[in-house]
Image 1 (cartoon, helix red, strand yellow):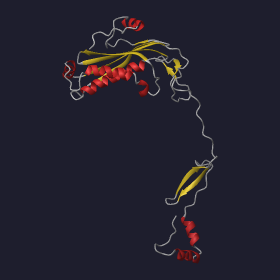
Image 2 (image 1 turned 180 degrees about the horizontal axis):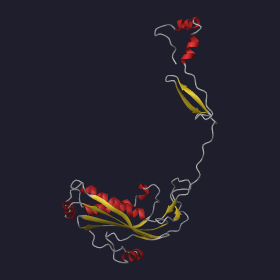
Image 3 (image 1 turned 90 degrees about the horizontal axis):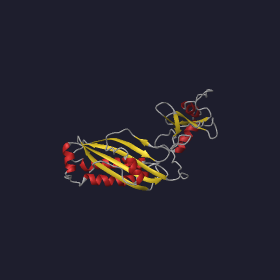
Image 4 (image 1 turned 60 degrees about the vertical axis):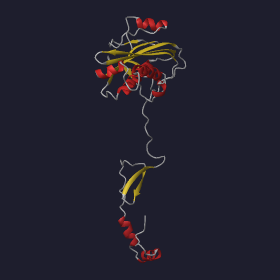
Amino acid sequence: MFDAVSMGQPRGSSDKARSADPNSSTRRNEEQPRLPPDPPSAPWSGMIRTRCRSAGVVVPCRRAGSGPPAKRQAPRQIEHVTESGDQTMDFTHVDAEGRARMVDVTKKAPTDRYARASVTVEMSDATLAAIVDRRMEKGDVLQVARVAGIMAAKRVHELIPLCHQIPLGSVAVDLEVRQPSTIAIVAKVRARAVTGVEMEALMACSVSALTVYDMCKALDRGMVISNLRLEEKRGGKSDFLAQPSGCMEPASGAANRGSESGDEPGTGAAL
């Protein structure tokens, strides 16, 4: 810190003044606050204390190689718990210590995979009429939304951090007008791969619905995107079929026959 020297006073004269006054060092020592002794349970035990001289604050600093070593938390298993409370399996995207990881699928054999997802977009009657009559300024809303959904399904691995890049065999996006003033969107994805295509189907629905909103927001900013969900998943260790949601459900058995034979599952009357 700066010496207590008057501005403009030569440094030599300050030294002479201090040598002439034998009590000056005693006064300087009394001005500095003394550090209290460390109690046995002091929080800075094993640390070096430093002083911020301008504020008179004692700051604890850890001495290198001193103090108790940091305790490492024991590995914790993160398991899936069903509604009944049964633990069924470990989460695959975290390791034993809870850190995120990409699942290793290099040893798995490819199998046929199929997934179907759905979403709805609610809007005003005037907006729906403009879409059906192709009167929107940005163009054909339904066709652009369909292409956007197909493109999105092929880019899932770039958007979802731990998803694998999957060579998709087929992506189909269907849009159907429902009453009152609703567009139902269903995406169906197939591939022969080592992991499922559920995220690809969900992503296709999401981006397709967002495209509808983007192309119509100038006319209706109150549109509501809702009910995004996985409807069906087949292939891999287990299959899944959701309860009917009324969103373009195919005829009984149509989805299974279509996905098995290579034909598109039935979709009803779509635009």
